[in-house]
Structure formats: C-alpha cells, structure tokens
Image (cartoon, rainbow over all chains, first blue to last red):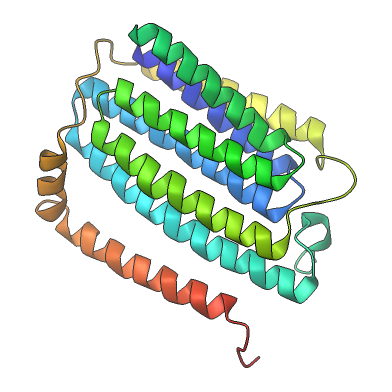
Length: 99
Length: 160
C-alpha cells in the first residue's frame, strides 16, 4: 500500500461520484453522490498529509467533515421543501428555474 | 497484512461507491454510502490517522446516514422509469475527469515513503484551539446557521 494506490482509489471514487451527480434521477441520489466526491477528496488529503507527516491535513479534514454535515442537513431540508411544494424529488420534474 | 487489508478495503470502497450510483432504491444507495464511508475510515486507519477514522465513523457516517434515511422516509426515494438520466454523456464525463485528474497528479508527482500520520489527537486538538481558533469559531457560527436554516426551511407552518 503506497500513496499512489490510495490516490488512485480516491480518484476512482471521485469519478464514480461525478457520474452519480450527472446521472442520478432523484435529488437525494445526487446529494449522496456529492458526498462520495467529497469523501474521495478527504481521502486524498489524508493520504498526502499522512505521507508528509503534516498536521494541517488532519485539521483541514476535520473542518471539512463538519462543514459537509452542515451542508447535507441544509440540502436535505431543501429536498423536503421541494417535495412538499412539488410533490416530487425527481430532477426531471424540478425544472422551474430552467428558463 | 497491511497490503491485504488495503486491497479488501479498497475493493469494498469502490464496490460500495458503484452501488451508490447504481442502486435503484435510494435506501440501498444510502446504506452503500455508509459502507463506503466506513471503508474510508479503515483506509484512514491504515494511513496512520486513527482520530480521523473515529470522527469519520461517528460524525460523518452516523450523521449523514441518519439524516438521509430520515429524509427518505419523509420524501420517499423511489423514481419510476429509467435508472439514469443521460447515462452515456455522464459516464464519458466521469472517465474524462478521472483521466484528467490522474494526469495532473502524475505530473505533479507524489511523495514516496511510508505514512507518517497526521499527528495525534492531542496535537490536532491543540492546533485547532490555538493556531486555527478563528476557523474553529467560524465553524461553530456556520453550524448554528445551518441548524437555523434547516429548521426554517423544513418548518411546516411558515407564513408564505
């Protein structure tokens, strides 16, 4: 297990997340895919920071995790509001803002 | 031993990640995400960052999974019809992103050598409460704002 291995895994997870964000049909699925991308970035940060023995990487990831949990709380609140107003979570039907 | 653990964790991680974007039921996708996050915590352990592994499981996996399952119970997670929108362009974009990032990382070069760790919990805690105190306080304001924002948005009886 070297740094390269971990980075390749992180890149693959990020790419899978990109696919999910673009291809998922339900809002919650897109949020889950965003989490996947975020987690991939965290993994890359931790691996690189750890191979350099850098304390800052750990601090950055801790802050990042806290921010993400806040983000997903607000995101899911938005999903609930969208569901209440439009009675759907399918992205194809949530296109009011799409000129 | 470490190599075996790495391959098992990496395989689980990528399989779970694939399940997140392919599962028809969003409940399954949410639990696959939890599995992916938990295997990431295992990789943090292998990368000599035990504190981050603990935070990953306690805060991230637990928090995200609870919130998502709550939202799915209320809003329902099923969509009928095709599994994906625009699967082919999405897959092409994902592959291009992977290749582009791999090339950038390859050009930048990665430091070799073993994982030295990102510092003990005590060291990270001291850094957060001294050097990064402003960021820490801003984070607490952000969390407060997120709590109020989520409550305000999700309230049923808001005057509109």
